[in-house]
Length: 74
Image 1 (cartoon, rainbow, N blue to C red):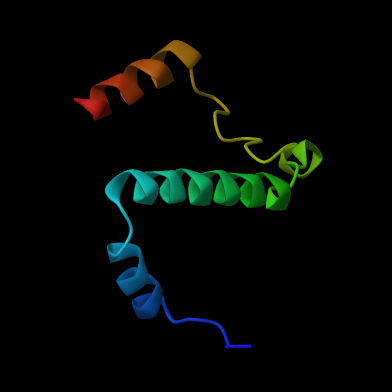
Image 2: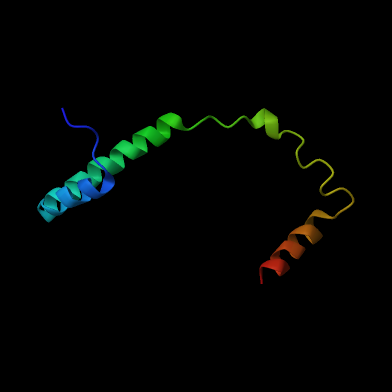
């Protein structure tokens, strides 16, 4: 049984395949990657974010802060 192929070998083999089959392969790979990404995605621990910005806006007017952010974007 042959060992794993290199990316270059795989690309050469793909070039031999009809374009519509290449597209099907691409779709299959995208679905596989999406599944693995979803499976590997960790749940965000909101508790660890609690109090992170404490004191950030202390003594600042909320509207002035928002206005300043908007000015900085321009």
